[in-house]
Image (cartoon, rainbow, N blue to C red; front, side, top):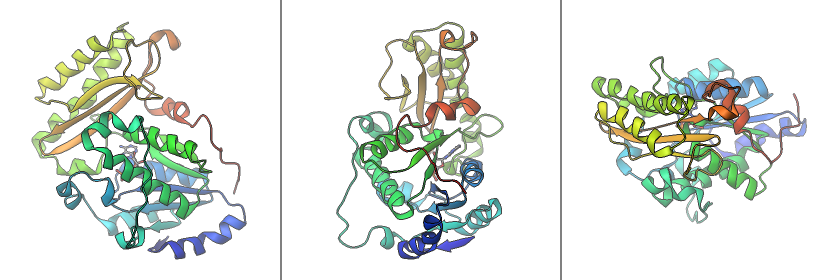
Amino acid sequence: MRVIRTVAELRAELLESRRAGRKIGLVPTMGAFHDGHLSLMRRAREDCAVVVVSLFVNPTQFNDPDDLDGYPRDPERDAALAAEIGVDYLFAPAVEEVYPDGFATTVSVRGITETLEGAHRGRAHFDGVATMVTKLLNMVGPDVAYFGQKDAQQAVVIQRFVRDLDIPVAIDVCPTVRESDGLAMSSRNVHLSAADRARATALHRALGTVRDAVSAGERDPGAARDLALAELARAEIEPDYLELVSADTMAPLQRIDREALVVLAAPVGETRLIDNELIRPASETDGDGKSLNRSTSTARWRPRSGRQPSRKE
Ligand code: AMP
């Protein structure tokens, strides 16, 4: 695996593969790798001839300077893990390489960015994500870029601007990887105290109560939400938000009569955690209302338009 620091070097390295028509996969990350990141890399490794992982803690998407300063970083361990999976290039640029003096451009997505994470973290968060991901897609020029369903709203925002800006890439959204007790893996989990780590399992349980209620026939989002809030309250967790929204638009649902995404963000101690679960009511399933998380979710999240990768190894 080669570690690359500049855009010029990255382009030079990828030139031959591009000319030869080899399929290039990109996995954008902010480092401090866990199994969630590694699952995206493995997926890219299976699908693509050339795998690029970017490692860049993007300052423009942090709304809280302390969160940026305290963001976990372990570049040597990250490089060893990526190399073990067989990643070809780890692109880890300096901040000045990404944002040179005079940088003045923002990719800003309306609507979908204004609720949930956007409402709580402010406009700059998704502007920072959209601008950075656009830059990475332009730097690498991948056939496929891999993202996690863990950041569900981010995935929808990325699919939106990729379509709007006609960026020639397929977006593959991969299932959330969890700890054995259900906690969604996150780089920020290392900040949880032992007591908060135990309380944090309530997030997954709360999502489970909604899934179970919907399986049992509940169609009222308010009632389903109350069950989840009660589960969180038992762990003394007060969420920033807990909503049942449309999986496509992230708009609130009036009734659970189609595929729904339960999205949740909550501070647990000093650490803010997010999680979500895709749910569909029984009438749309084989008869036994199932969660779409994990194995079946990816197919549902594949972009409905935009170029599918056509080049093969
Ligand atoms: P981050 O380094 O947190 O920006 O995450 C990089 C990518 O990994 C994003 O596409 C995330 O959605 C994805 N990711 C983070 N946590 C998980 C997880 N637990 N399971 C699957 N993907 C994840």
